[in-house]
Each structure stands twice: as structure tokens, then as C-alpha cells.
Image (cartoon, rainbow, N blue to C red; front, side, top):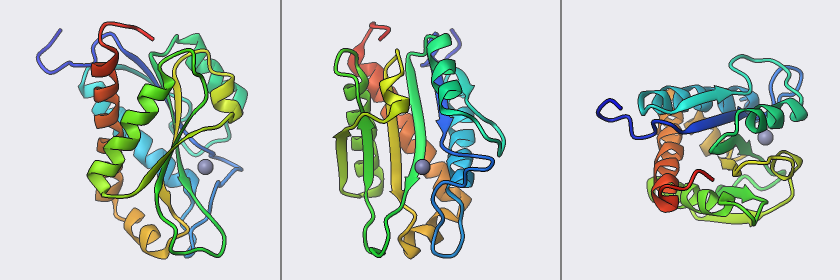
Length: 192
Ligand SMILES: [Zn+2]
């Protein structure tokens, strides 16, 4: 292990939500969720690689990927953690902006990961967040610890503007990374 390779031996699958024909949410001035999900995931991919993790991505370009294939990649690679990256949106409520982190399984360490990711966002962005148990298909069918992050609400015009600055997408990637590091601290030597 090289100095600094703190995630050596860990397999992490990143899933930038939507892509291709599926735009995901669209911000008030037209920012596409599929684009920023991918940008954050690519930044995070670089960080995790530097830290020695083996990182797979369900997509690295703007292409359509079926939900089943996203889950299958995580299951097939026996990921230590599967992270779905999204940005949220709500109609007629421009003031709403918070982080939501979702998990489903209660038989593995998904909740520990979700909790650390949320705490990391709250710490770094000073946003009020929510930890939510929800049976999203992408979480329910994962056979490995899995979380889905809705980093913030891109339906907020202020937040959409913030998301257009690539430095802030790096900050998001760093927030997720910080949560991932704390998650592996929490579970110690366990692989699940
Ligand atoms: Zn989404």
C-alpha cells in the first residue's frame, strides 16, 4: 500500500443518476441534472482513485443506462459501497434546499453509510438534511451496501447558479468522499 492509499482494497461503484434520453430534473434556467450528476461523479472518481479504491462507474458519458444494469454492476463487482448521485427538484417551492440521503437495507451497513454522507453534507454545506429509508428500486435490488444521495435542490434558482460553478461540484464530491472515509472508519475491518 502506498502512503495515502487509505481506501486500498475497497471497491466502490458510483452511479451518476439519469443520462442519455433521461435528463432527470431540469433547473429553473435549464441546467440538466444528468450533467451535474456525472460531473460530481467524475470528480469523486478521481478522488477515490487517488485514495487507492477500485472505482467503477455505471456511466462515464451522457448515455442511457438501465436501472437493472446499474444495480448489476454493483452486485457483480461485490462493491463495498454503491453510491447513487442525484440532485433533487420540487415544483413551486424555490426556497426548498436541503440534502437527502436514502438507504433501504437494514441487514447491512447501508444506514451507517447514509448517515455519514448526510453528516458530511451538513458539516460542509451547513444545510439541514434528512436521512430517509425508502425502497427505491436501485437500493432495494442492491445486494451490497447502497445509498442514494440527493445532494441539494436544483429547483432553487440560487442553488442552480451555485451548481454552475465547477468548484462547487468538486466541493460536493469532497463531501461525499469525506462521508465515505468516515463510513469505512465506522465499520472498521468489516467488508460489508
Ligand atoms: Zn435524479
